[in-house]
Length: 414
Image: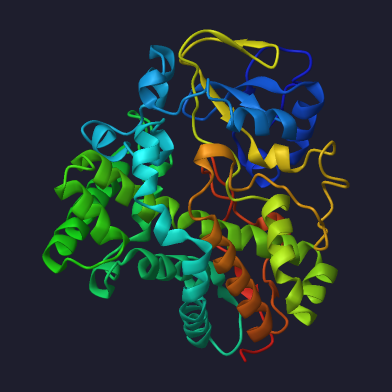
């Protein structure tokens, strides 16, 4: 793929293709050097405005002129971006990522208690048990695909514990349903499969709600159902929040486990340090989040009237996207930004966003990553990539980074 020079053209820069997904950082570097805001083109045909650079990203994430509600989008954006058909779009897209205050404040308040650092710390022994059980089930020696063997299963098992998804309901979850967040246009040959996934997930959410009403358990899902029954949530808000929990609550952690391991495989000296000195894990996780974040880009933001964004005029209803990965490699904020430095401190990365939409599950994600990496490195000596680096197949997801397959080898399972 040939990438146009962002400094010499007003044409949108395409954010698509295998070379870009394999390594977007050279493009982000050129964009940062050319300025903070750039027109870009997504695979769906959506043209958007991409914010790059740490200071601009930080400011945009806290800019109350930029709203998240899809009702702000103009007809030009809606023609390309409203990929999820009705009625599912209205029924499943009313979650926190698409809400502004005061609705966002009201809905977020119902969720935060389940993800406090104190509660996550209390759950740490159980999270460790889940990680160990999955490693126990791995073959004595590799090679194996670590995504279905560990990285995809571990975050979902942890999520089920945290939100109160009972075992027999959790067993029916199909990870393939998570692909409904990957755009598939109306004329795409894969559209029937996409819609089948969407209907499957919607039916599953209805099953979760029915189970909670029947059992009246005091957990996050149970409290959300009670909030709906007390009219503190609409049915669309309830279904959308469960949708967000099931998809955003696990898939990014799966992807972050893969990006973190790939980064360590590419830096064997740092991998060896981490294996020999587990006390480095907290700082190492922060650096791995900064170095290659699973949340590559944020979801849409919109001005409700024509406005100016760092010197660039942006029409009302055009989508504004913040590149978290570009911000986290800005040399004006991070010394040696392309270097993986497990001792980096301070490390004010934006991997979980910032402002009112800061990821509510950040404490849980950090605990999962520390336990996952610590367990894999300590119990699988000699852990290494079992394919050539250039053969890694990066997911085509528009907003995220990761891989659905990570073949690894190891000397033995302890």
